[in-house]
Length: 489
Ligand code: ACM
Ligand code: ZN
Image (cartoon, rainbow, N blue to C red; front, side, top):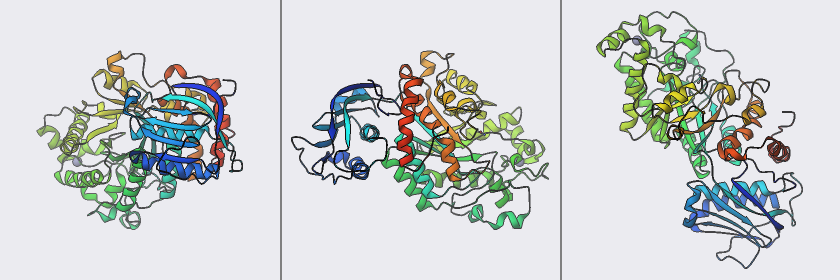
């Protein structure tokens, strides 16, 4: 192919055809009943980009149709694969699953001219046969609303941009040491803007934008994502990174004088039962809101300072026969895991959950390099790679360039083939400790997320930096049409 198609992530197999399919006022869109929701989303996108009415007849006409159909005979393409065939007379999207069909529509969207241009009769896409399936099942972006609140409109747009790049996991890091925006029935002070002013404890981080997400709002976000085959994986960080909850409800704190008022160094008292009453209530509500099989419980950077001084934590440690505070954290994580498992969910946490012994069914998110992921996979646990070295998109471009992200390999060479199967995939992290604006967040995430999309979707052997650079140059026009300027990266 002389001019590469502006596709990112690049598909598994691409075979250029002859000619092109031209959208006209009579071009129609035909879909199986099972494909109806995806067809509606596609019709809206195509109407916007082509200016054509795209009628929806029941029957496929002899020519001039975009056709979506589930096809069980394509089962070999897996849970998210698809086939897209464009000829001069038709555009056929087929997949064994609704998810595959949805990803096919995103590829079709990327076949449209990248430049915004004037919509109207004559908009064309090149003839091509594409067979595609992702390399990894976990293709994620993490958004942090625990340091700074993000508006719902921003979160919806974040999902739209994700699916354009075939990401399928929105890891929503809801709570952290800046703010707890998720409404929890029975605990109204979590979002009380007066909490900081009235309690006058501690040194809150500066510049935090607080806010609140209601249950109804969260349900709408989750449904919007699900309609686009994105699972929202919620994270409630514990036992560290929990200062807003402890500010609002000091009874869940260790009953000892604070050694430091830095919020980073606060943790739940894991010795006392009422802490579990609170966390179980929170997690029960989180499970009711988020159908995700995985619930992320954080586990990162817990200082454990107060546990060492706390008579309740120490009594618990001794009663459970635990050697040290690492084992105490491990005991805490196992207890939370039992609660999640009893409700049919699985626990995922940052790689600190390895310290003191990994909970039996836990999945590890490896962030302090890939070492934690290697250790977990070797021990037979599932892993999501999220190392600071390549996937922290809050870091500046000078530290983590697009080219560096593009070179990331989620499966370390140390792993055997059987161990490598535990690598579920990889994801990027967008932390908001530095309080970027929403526009700045998008500019930090893109175009690096385009590079990561290829890492997690495209076959490893298809990676080609020159082809990617050419695609990205054209894709930049597509993103510009969506109001995102990635030039100058
Ligand atoms: C992390 O960056 N604390 C997971
Ligand atoms: Zn304690």
